[in-house]
Amino acid sequence: MPRVISLGLAIALTALVSSAEAASPALDTAREAVRRDDVDTVETTLVDLVVDGQPDPATLLEAAYLAQEVEASTATSKVRDLATALTEQPDPPPAARVARGYAALGTAVWYWRQKMQGSSIPLLFNEALAAGRVRSGDPSTDDLAALLEARTHAARGTHDEALQALATRRAEGITSPWTPLLALSEARLAYDRGAAVAPGEDGRPTAEARADLEQAASLFATYADALPGLPLRPAKRTELATRRAWALHRLGRVDEASEAYARVYALGGDARSLAVRGLASLFTYEPDRYRDALDRLGRTSGPAGDVALDALTDAWLAENRIGPALEAAEARRTLAPDDAASWRGVAKVFEACDQPEEAISHLEEALRRDPGDRAAVFRFDAIARSVVDDDPTRTIAWYERLVAVCPNDPFLWNNLGFLLREQVSPHTVLGDGGQQTITPDAPEVVHEQLARCVQAYERAVALIDPAEDGLREMEQDWNLATVVNDLGLMLHYFVDVQDGPRAEALYLRALAMTEDGYKDSYVPNLQRLYRDVLGGHELAWYRAAVRASQGLLQEVPREDGGFDLVPDDAKRAVAAEDAKRLRARILQELDASAPEPDTDASDPDADATDR
Image (cartoon, rainbow, N blue to C red; front, side, top):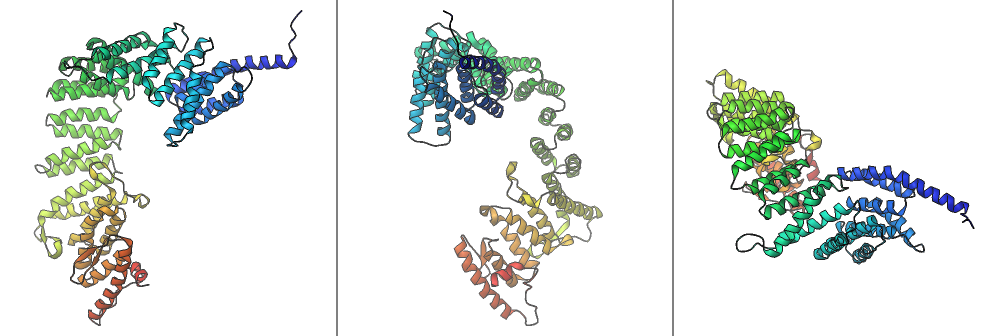
């Protein structure tokens, strides 16, 4: 008697087949996104697949793995909802149980990363472990289940159990497309266990450690070719490839380790620096072999060879071999002529052989390609300052060339202003309060240099957006407040360009830009400005006290003319009352014909304090 299939069941089977066919492109997209570490694409693709795609259990399982691999929390939640619904039906499919386990593991890891400690994390781990022990007879499902068990053990810190789960599955001799991933995961765990054992008295791995390292090296060798195609994040691919090289390195298999490091380098990105450091360690006592390895990588890796050639340049410079170093640096420049770092590398060689003009020219070219290259700016500054005592005119000319290339860098303009100021200072006489005046017999060029100095400082300050006045730490402890303060110093101490009110505004702006712990370095100049330029020291006491009461300064005046620190808001309130009393005393002692200090427009803080 022929079997009768209901219309509803036929429609359901047709939908299942269609969804499986539709799932493949979505999974392909998600796999590729995992390899690129594109978490957003993984999230959106898997959420659409799980919510709208009606995936079959096998597809749902792979989606669960991919979501857990990149810690895609939204996709993990959707997988968990669907997998839970499937496992609560009679005779649930094993793949759905394993998918639910992956979602449980992903949720537990997410809770842990969010520091949401509690009883739910152990329960989720237990759920994941139970799912990892499911066996269905389907090779792919069972491989992913074993991998789930191992990953859960690893997340719990029970690494021996994780290694045992993978070794047991491999011993069953059943393969699937996931077998290479399981084998490489086992190799990683074996390496980590072997590397954790302290070496013997001869400095070599113990017998126990060697067994793990040999096992890791063997598995890595067998499955290394499969690594690029596995749906793993780039960081995990790098970890696996690097551990292969490390295992061979620890075993003393130098030639194989060198080749393994070359494979790591071929992964690109940050892996290149790891490979270079590994080669440096491998050939610590064989510098010729180290340089040969770098040379091969640099010349055979296409544009990615830049890191190897940079390291090769440094290696030759360490031996003071200028010719080969220059050859390596120029090879790197030929490889990437539009990369600022290429020109910096050549500049480094010329700097090492005491050719500052050539070095400066190449740094200038680097900054033409990337005006924001801070490494080039600071290298330029170091070279310029190294020759300024011998030839200040040349140094200033270099800086004027540089600000033409990078006209929007406030620190370069500030440095130029400083260099010009240093040329003016020897032609000044020092007056009361440290104020400087250009001598009558100074050459005209000194007045020109002073004008250019102020222009440079003004340009530096003009480039600082007031909206960005919050502290912005730069390399070498530079920050924008110093730029503002330096112009204030010029307008305060150089009589020929003196502008007291503008200097005051600049000092106060620098104070506002600076964290409390660093304000002390700016306070003395402001107090001297009040004393020497803006009205005498009694009035300066009053104004400083008013400023202190508003929280702009950390000091208030004493009756003897000194200043006390004001460490907190409560003491500042007391300082405000002291300021009122001090003001009254000052006004009594000042000449009756002297006008009262303007507290309306020029010093709005004073009115606020009086109130």
